Amino acid sequence: ASAVPALIKRLDDANFNNQENAAEALAKIGDGRAARPFVAMLRDPDKHRQARSAAATALVALGDAKAIPDLLDALRDRDELSRYLSLKVLRVIGDGRCVPAAIAALRDPESNVRWVAVETLGALRDARAVEALLDLLVRSASEPGLSREIIVEALGRIGDGRAVPALAALLHEPEKVLRDTAAAALDALGWQPADDAARVCYYMARERWDELARLGWE
Image: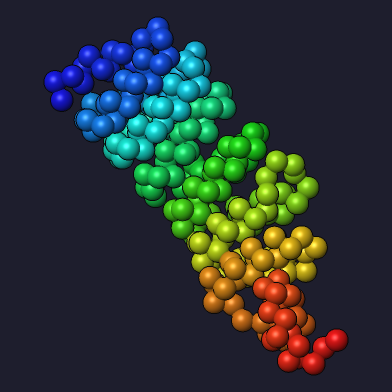
């Protein structure tokens, strides 16, 4: 622990490799004094991408909830990498205070930020995110850069019944991966097909050909 002040100073070293090594060392020591310097390093657009990623990894290892207010503030930064890395850290720390900010990030102009926001909301499993995720599911059908599968997976993890109609509709989609992901999410929600038409779509998504054959449908 006596090395912490000197290592924190090295986070501003002229060499980004030294910055990265200092972050790794501080993460191993696990001293909370490094939390705010890590966030500052993560948010600094003048620092090398590799060093900023090392700061995010160190924050995850540190797991200090005291960093959350600064990370939430970073979601308002103009710098895309700052927003992206902050969300990645918040996803792992897993505090409910992150939910409104992650919901807002579903409308971020950068698709990779929207992507990690979806993953964050799925990990937090907070029902407040359901309506926003359903809205994104509709938009993502025509917006490039974000697969519908990760949205469906997040809705399955949250486990709110409001998602059932939208997920059941995806069983009719032509893409096999999307159909299978929707079926898995519906399983997580405890959904059961209401009629033979729904059973056919579900069994086809799950490739349960023996059960499909027993329905007597060609």
